[in-house]
Image 1 (cartoon, rainbow, N blue to C red):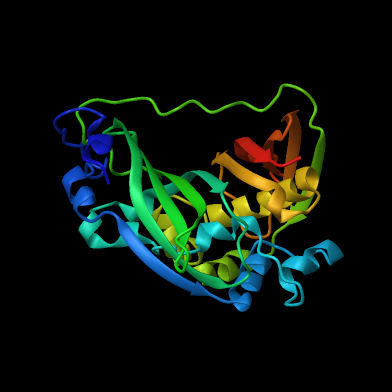
Image 2: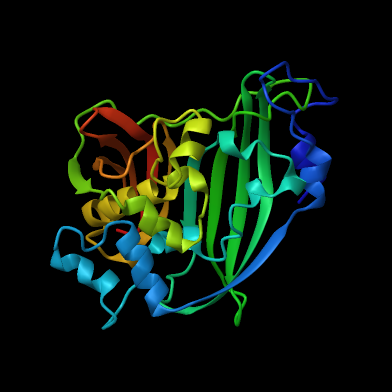
Length: 307
């Protein structure tokens, strides 16, 4: 991790007021990065990921390619769980108020199609960080490059933005995070409604994200939530399946990148409606709603794909 990227947000430190949390210790964060993780995955893991983002839940035969071991294909967004370093923000050496962390943004760039099984290495480092102030938290972007262990080929780059609600006020100044790209101001070109189950978060956590906010009601309430919420990466996976179907004809190799901002939590059992727009040759936009509450849950979604 390059020190200057962490220190772009200003000089000096401030002290957060009562109940505002503890300012992030940049030196501590810097000293424990990068995180290097190796991961051997099997067809069983590939099928588990697909099932955990709802593939097969509606009985659609087009999902068989992702859940049946014969001619099995990996969903491109499985990259988000490969060589995942675990819920490292919970580890005491990082000094983060982990119960108040929310998944804010997600983006994935696909450089090579994922094989249904293999051995990969992930290198996780801090990409960017923005201090929003002692009473407003911080926005942390972490990048993970995923490579084939045998060939060193770069397979995918995963960028995750997290809102650290309890760790702002570390820089003495505040900077605005990048502004999102709005979706087109016109009727969507297409949409798709995909359900989630009451057990969706319980299933998705088997991919490696064991944050108890997704299963333990007490931890969820401590974080200011009424009940456990769906993983942001699960919501992202459901949305990506819809985008893959609507813009890429369910041909996984055509997807080149996808990203978006999380705007509200999704609860297990919600139905997610994904709306898409074609914005140019090989480019698109999307957003997602939970229809039961008419709640916008992903906004400013962007997609690139091979025509």
